[in-house]
Image (tube, rainbow, N blue to C red; front, top):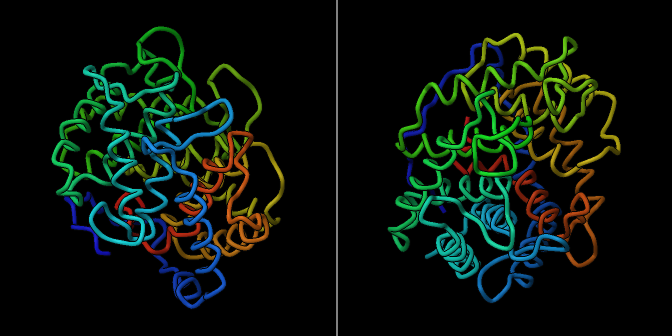
Length: 333
C-alpha cells in the first residue's frame, strides 16, 4: 500500500541528521513479520460488530478504536485495499458515527484522551480513503473542538471545556492530532500551537525530564517521551527542552529497557521521538523495544496494555513495531 502524499510539512532536522539503518534490519526479519501478523490477526478477531474495540472499563472506546485502525494502517491496509480492509472500514465508520455535531468524538464515556487518538486516526486516514468522503468534514469538526477547548493555561485535560487546569499527557495527545490534521491541509491556529508548547515548557525539569503538571514534582518516563514527541511534531527542533529530553531518553535506552508504569504508552511516544531524532538515537532505542515487545507477546498474538486491555496494548505494540515502514504520515521524517 502506498499512501497518497499529503501536504506534509517536512522540516529538515538540523540537530539530528544521521540516517538510521534499522529499517533494513526490520525488513529482513521474518520472525518480526510473524509477530506483527499474529498481532493483526488478534485485533481482527476481536473487533466488535459495530466496528469498535475496547477492553475492561473502556468498552467500545473511540480512542482504542482509533489506535487499532492505525495499527492496520501502519501495515498498509486501507478501507479498499489489503487483507484487513473490512476491519479498517468498520473502524472508521464507528469513529465517523461517534462524532457529535460539536466535533467531540465520544462513546461509552470516552474523554479527551480518546478524542485525541480518534482525531489522529481520522487525520491519518483522510486523503487515502475515497470511500469515506465524510472523513474531511468529521476531521475538521474534531479539530475545531480541540482548538475551542484549549484551556487558558495552554493545554487540555479530560473534559472538552476550558474550565480547570491541564495535564501534559492529554495536551500531547491533542497536539499530535492537530499536527496530523495540519499535515492534511486543515488550518490550525498558530497561537493554539504556541500556547501548547508554552504549557509543555512549564512541565519541564532541568535534567531533561518532564512532569505531569507544572505544579507537581518529580517526573516520569512516559511524560518525558510524550513531551519530546510533542516538541518534534511542533517543529521545535532547536529547543533546549528537546535537546535535553532526547539526551535523557538516550541515556535511559543505553541502560536497557526496564519495567515502569505505563509501559506501552511510554514506548508509543518514545519510539516516535527517537525515530524523528534518527541516527544513534533510533538505532539504540528501536532494537531494544522491538526485542522486548517480541518477548512480551502472548501466544494468542496479543499484548497486555497498561491495565487498559489487550486491544490497547496490541495496537500500541504494533504501531511501535511498524514505525520503520513509515506508512503513517505522522511518522514520516
